[in-house]
Amino acid sequence: MKKRNLTLLVSLLIVVLLLVGCAAADQEEAAVEEPVVEEEVSDEATLLFSGSFAEDVTYTESELRAMETMDVEDVDNDGEATTRTGVSLNTLLDEAGVSDEAVTLVFITNDGSETEVDLAEVRACAECIIAFRNNGGFRMTLPGFPNSAQVRGVIEIRAQ
Image (cartoon, rainbow, N blue to C red; front, side):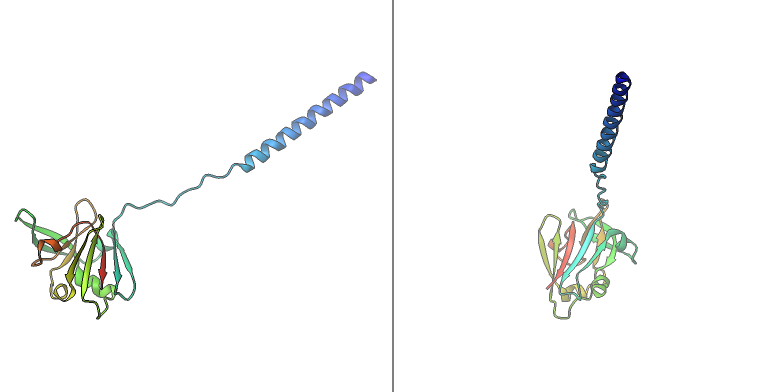
């Protein structure tokens, strides 16, 4: 009888240990967090209109490419004529709601440089565009303006 009780006690102890082990494993699995899924980051270029506008407006390259575009002939740094495609700068200034009090536009590039142009001169330029670059992003194409205004890598246009 003692042997039977001992066998029963050992069997009961084994079952208890197995149950405790399974419960601990379940708790460890529950403690493992789900992997965090990060939002996909877009490499698409954007262009911010800031400063003296009704509100700051940001356009993606896709949004600008979906707008009405125009081709403008421009002279590159080597003196060769080049046709560039882009969106009318004046159309975008109107859409973003540039203030009547603004007198200057500042073109800010992805390397942090800034170039200022007179807003009244831009408003008189029907062929001034924000042109698309072959490798993505934007450049200012302002026929008749100095070469210093023809900046590449534009990421922001600030009205002041």
